[in-house]
Image (cartoon, rainbow, N blue to C red):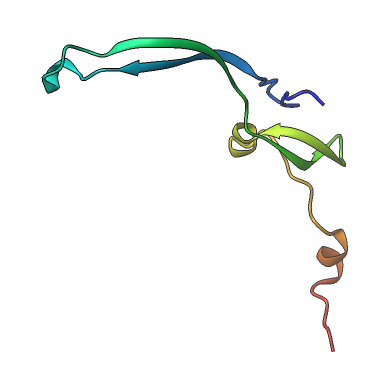
Amino acid sequence: MPRVCSITGAKVRSGNRISRRGKAKHLGGVGIKTTSVTKRTFAPNLQSVRAVVDGAPTRLTVSVRAIRSGKVVKAPRRAFLRKHGSIKVG
């Protein structure tokens, strides 16, 4: 399964991990030097969510950014409890 958001299309992006050493000049050093640059990946924060799509609950892989911004309408947990109220035990 690819790491892609179903709503926003957010996917894995690549970047650099930069290693540095030394002491900053304003702290009395001779400056910070870059010692190595290696590739790394930035993965989106994806969650599996039951969302309402075309009136039916569907399981989607959605980024947390889309959930927080309100682009996803979550499906209700149980239709039975909404219809009949709380269940009395005992």
